[in-house]
Amino acid sequence: MEIVNAYVNNIMGLSTIMGENPREVEEFYKRLLYNMQCLETLCKLCDVAGNVRAVLDKLKGIKSELVQGHGQWQEWDFRLLLQAVKRWKGISPVINASESKIQPREPTYNYPKRKE
Image (cartoon, rainbow, N blue to C red; front, side, top):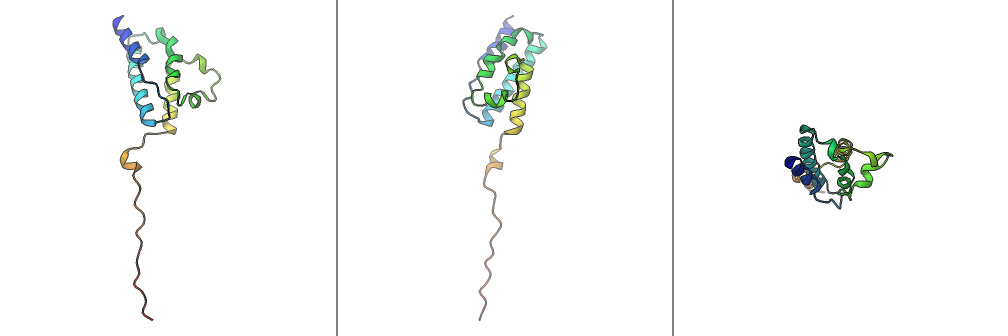
């Protein structure tokens, strides 16, 4: 039971995401996924389904986007929450530093002046 409580505490201890930073959401997703998989392995994921709403509330910055178009979002389990976050990540991917640098422009050519 202590192990289950540790995984639940890890989930409930996830940081609240106030904005729409893809990197923060990615980290949140990874930690949630890991702890969910552990609880699922222990056959305890259903026992903590009551915490889904509290975890969703930790995603304040993207909550409205996650639930948009889902009339039954109040009844989500952890799997549906993860699917929604995964869809959001697909729309708002993390951009690596090398990808976000300004791309070089096409070279400009300085033609010699014509002699008249």
